[in-house]
Length: 160
Length: 76
Image 1 (cartoon, rainbow over the protein chains, first blue to last red):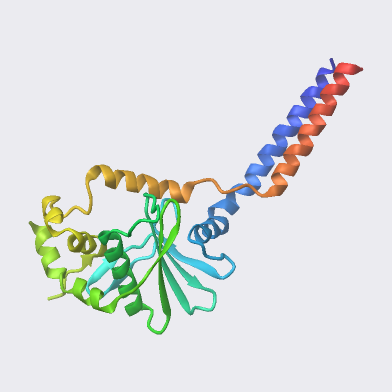
Image 2: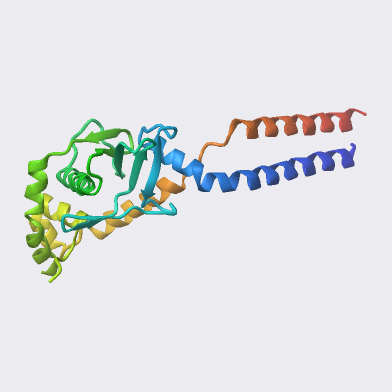
């Protein structure tokens, strides 16, 4: 058996793997991760970019403060022409063709409302990313105003 | 006096279930489900991305070289 030839082959393999890993690591942490986040919400990375995300390890979260509310959506995207803003929320359960819970609906509605205040004149969309599918959320002005009217009650409930 | 800001998650949880929100003393969800949700969010962003196809071509080529070398060393 030609031991030097085998050792040479194995060393070549190891070197190639090390170089490949070193080359790939920086790309995964920035542009590739943003593209992956876009795709996970069914958005085309060529048409949207990430404004901020509050999922583990993402470098820049997006905070919104408007109408007496403060929040940090899981992900906020903007189209390349700046005309469309998309807020995305990640849910750990399966949708299974079922309903969106009241909590999920209200949370998304509040994000949509506050983003409309912040990004006036731009189209605001909401997407709920469940394990098995992505569901679009609709905005309802009347419900949003009703939710805003509960702010003081909520603060009292928090204070106990 | 400046108006106190209300966290969106808190207001949504209160509107969806006021009595439950009070019972949890302002918590959005139970500690167990909150922990699960946090772990899920963390894994969501950190999951490995699919490797570019060229990496597999390199691996395949190198494997073929090693196999050829092994075959050569055993037969010569």
